[in-house]
Image 1: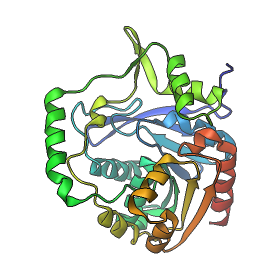
Image 2 (image 1 turned 135 degrees about the vertical axis):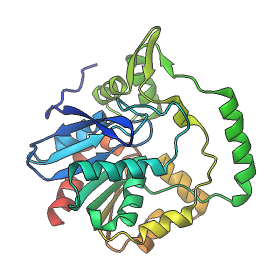
Image 3 (image 1 turned 180 degrees about the vertical axis):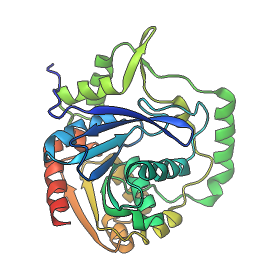
Image 4 (image 1 turned 60 degrees about the horizontal axis):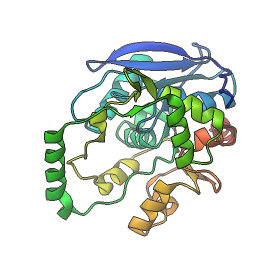
Length: 296
């Protein structure tokens, strides 16, 4: 299988954010306005490479590895979602100060971006979410069982995820997602792993896998979304298992839900793409983003 060759090489930077070393990648000229790329769960900054290569030159992209992912420092202890908002707030202080900026987030990164754009509305000028549409509502009656599950997991501890080679992981990624091209799967698998004594391990703190004992409160997320002032683009995949799961659970069309919350929203849907759309067909996703950025 041929390997993916980056068109625009990244530059790496490590900065201290709220007591942890955070690794970031930059693409494009330093003097251009910044666009932040926020990755999803178990991903890392590196795999925005395909999207960057497909977007116009002359833009300056910066993509952090969230705490406990990629090359950023680990908690080596349970993680709490609000910390990502705190980390993003500190990153914007570091790079742009009070100047409004653009956020592009995928999945978990899209959820972080949308929440942040509501609670710090003055800091975000444009918001793009790739499949970052939140989680299903959770019945409060599940709280006791969730705490039990979390306590049991704390007692048991966590283990690293091992693979014989990154090529084996690439094969597994393609079995899960047959829309993923060979070269992209290889690139992603290498970005997600690091050498270990008996193969490779994921560059991912296994403490992330613990059940969150705090139930997801959809009403609170939507309250934040209703305060977003920035023009917003939501990009969806018609083959996304996460979208299907969410809509079947709540019985609500996700587009209509977002339209009821965001003041200035445009929705684009790719019927043939899934949740990892920017890996599956980066040029198509980039074309939509480029057009929207040009109009906003």
